[in-house]
Length: 294
Length: 294
Image (cartoon, rainbow over all chains, first blue to last red; front, side, top):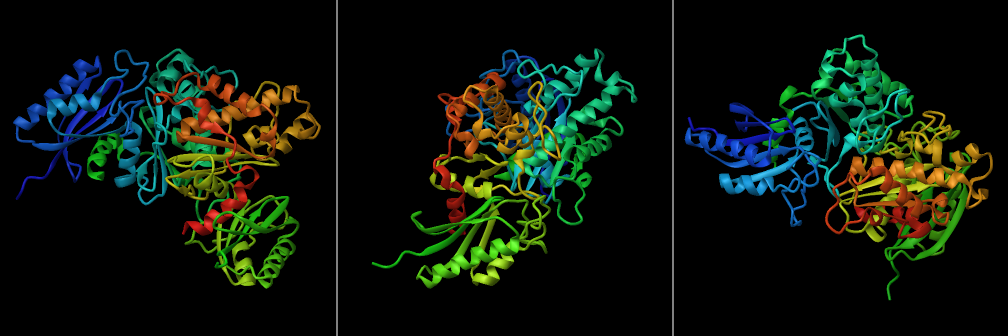
């Protein structure tokens, strides 16, 4: 039997870079986590890992990179393939694609982590056969990617859904340094920890924080429904693993939309909102979807 | 010289139906306004008008209909071409396409009024050569259409951007019967008249209402920028004709986004927001764009 065609995939986040060698059938042959430090150090370790894998026989010609943003994804731009202005120290204006390409001598496909995850869910996960779908991740940060007719939405730059404004819950002050009460400032894991002055994961199941969290995410979902008219909103990320949180978000979204949307016969709002079909792997498989997409 | 090819176009609104015979070059050969009453009466008058025009030599085979919603635009649906659940008396579940088609024996292309206007602006107006553009109308109601890669956004139904939630301005209560503080409930002409207890058009230029109006629309624009990453937001409709309102909206949008967006070099946020390029005719020419699009 022939060897499968291997692909190098990277999910680049603010905390860690997940690297793996995968094949078209989404078998993960080897994987490795690298802490996110400076871009020079991090990318050197990423490239070292893949050079080792090549030496071990995992040859590849394409690397998919699902990366935190903001990114310059405009092929006509002088700074294409660059991380643009980010508050993350040292990463602003780093030519991530160029560096990896030079080091590994391979083709690199870049996309935002959330657009890539949305693409993977569209291809293999919870939003197959939709014309419009959205993937939201609620973890350390809060962001979203959008797939329209099978393609990630870019526009001028790319969506920054975490910075959507909503009516804030009474008595709560959001902590986004740019916008205060945007959803990232109210509902990311980091925001929850600051607002409630304890790590989000230590908040008891019956803490009021979870009810407020559900209301905030529901208002985001309300806005996504009336803006994009999606056939699926996927809610992923560590924070969404809280038991019953999805159900609460569904309930509050129903309350918020107040039967305004004239849904097609047989469609229930709650069925349009789900967890990822690919579990923790939406981002990594998103990087694979990028290189398979062309 | 041959006669041009004529098209029948209709912009159907809650107050009036604008009907016209136009050609591909956007010459309006004849036009007529019909008050919106019951669907039976209104559509009978619309059809009478076009039958008369045919008798006068304006033969046409296609009619473009840019109509208020919500609409069923799903070609696979049993209720395709139907106005769905609307609070407008008598119009719910009216098969508008079917009625016009039968009466005039012609092909009918249907789209929401705002998606059609967005399409006309994309084709001939202020959002030419964009990959993502949005047309917002602020008049009696407040709504928006979205064009992505030359096509109106539908998804499950179609966008209902007027029902976007935003943090409400202090001391103001929105009047949307479904959502209270959605932008339609805060900033449509009807909402302004209710909130300030006088017709919006009689509010003096220096009334605080206009400053608050600009803040509300700016927050909508903030959300549209971070959701869609549009290359152009067009702000149309009667309310936007207020002198200096666009400038104020631009200023407040800059303040709200707080330099978060990493805009491409040379792009200024204010240049991404403008009035319609087609003036009052975005909707009518949108109906033309529909029949030319196929």
